[in-house]
Length: 76
Image 1: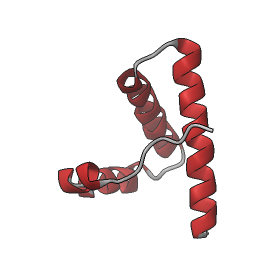
Image 2 (image 1 turned 30 degrees about the vertical axis):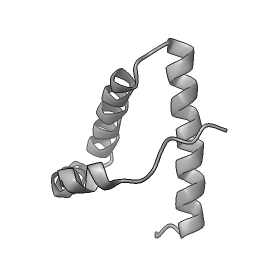
Image 3 (image 1 turned 90 degrees about the vertical axis):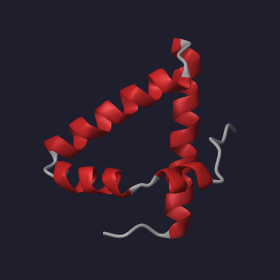
């Protein structure tokens, strides 16, 4: 199952809103929230049998890609 570009944008925007809502509700620094989200992603992937693929994806992300990302969390 492949996502369309508009679906990726929609999911990203909805997730951005949810992250901002959580950070605000629990008064947490974004780094704390990021740690929790990453841990939950790992649990999700482990539970669904795709942890090895997730780890490969994470290993393939270079620092250049991370720092070149020209996106911001959107708050609507």
